[in-house]
Image 1 (cartoon, rainbow, N blue to C red):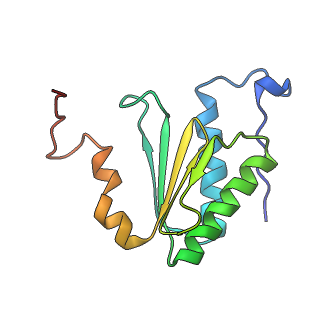
Image 2: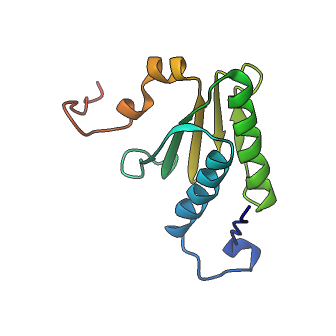
Image 3: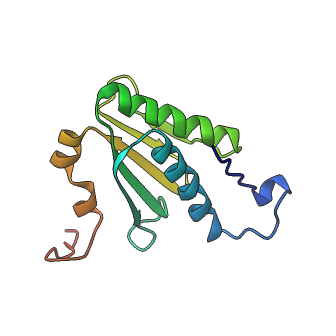
Length: 136
């Protein structure tokens, strides 16, 4: 088992890390946790040009409510272990869809049926046949 170490400039450990490097470092930590717990259909979306609330969105599926909860708990544990502030998490009780806000990265862990219903990848993608809709 390998260990990922993330150092933040506000901790005075790595003053060379820029704001553009932070999302990638957090995504690496999240992907490692998802891989360890055998999450399925992992996708990382760069949403920095679509919203100001986060830079990356990670979407993954779990096989059961218990699996979704376990994946979420592991991501939160690893983030706290690396002194990454967890701004919030929702959905742990039910385990159908857990959202974890790590500021630069928002993680969605969902049951396949919930993921298929909400289609977040399509919602946050401007590729393909979909056209951006103007706000009225």
